[in-house]
Image 1 (cartoon, rainbow, N blue to C red):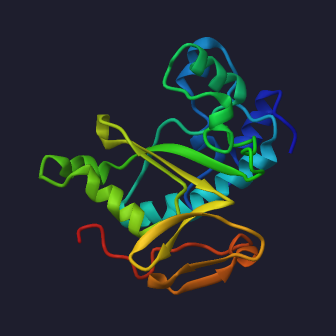
Image 2: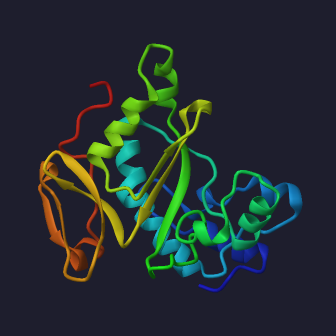
Length: 217
């Protein structure tokens, strides 16, 4: 797919389905772009789509299956939009740091693809006043999902969560350890019965909520 240069092209990009619940359009809104007259669209749509699918299939779908609807906040940023936000100190890291993070259509320095989005979980907001801390969500994610980035914020218990094709957290005994994956690597998640080579893991394997606790537990 070419970089969209028309409304029709942007609509076609937005219609791309990333996973069961999510479409590319869900991740393209940017307050910076809207207020400062910039198009928040990828230079390399195919790479952005592939990275977005990894994020949705491995992280967002399992989260939504357990905790209900997710509210997507800051997700994809074009290099131009991110650079503007960084230059004007609008909560954006540099383009170099955000490659394969918020800038889905650029690879990280190690050549890997990835994607980050900011998420709000209404289920968690409703329970903060009941004494359930944001740390409970952080530990649930840490124990169950193969994330590469996780950062929580004070307002609405929002958090950045990221997926990276070459860096995941894998189980070693009672801990999840960050690992750079190589071509012959095996990703093991014994609590849900996954033990597969990298080449197979990133060719259609869907991370499901099967065997995970219910949201109220």
